[in-house]
Image 1: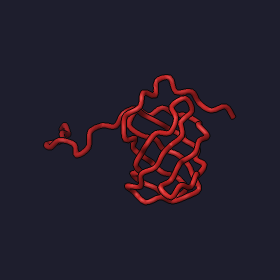
Image 2: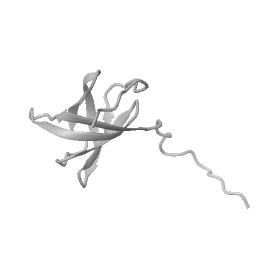
Image 3: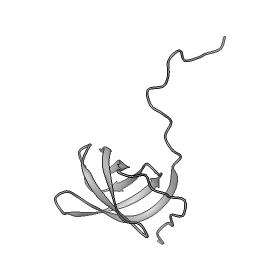
Image 4: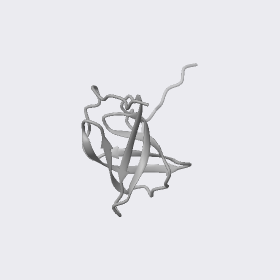
Length: 100
């Protein structure tokens, strides 16, 4: 017996993630700057570890070396990590990791 979905998926497949180790900072709406450790990134968004919990739909800026500050919107946050979607897709092909 074979299994098949009789309906289309609710969400399209996400873009491949690139594992990175980028030490950076977030610029929050109240002008605070918070340190973040970006762990993976794609053209659509990123996941990172930071010391604050942010509400979904919070708009922020992420400082990326060689890119400048990029706008993003928080999709989820909890347990010291967050995921955010970029306002405009990025070309992350040549993105270099931070040196430790």
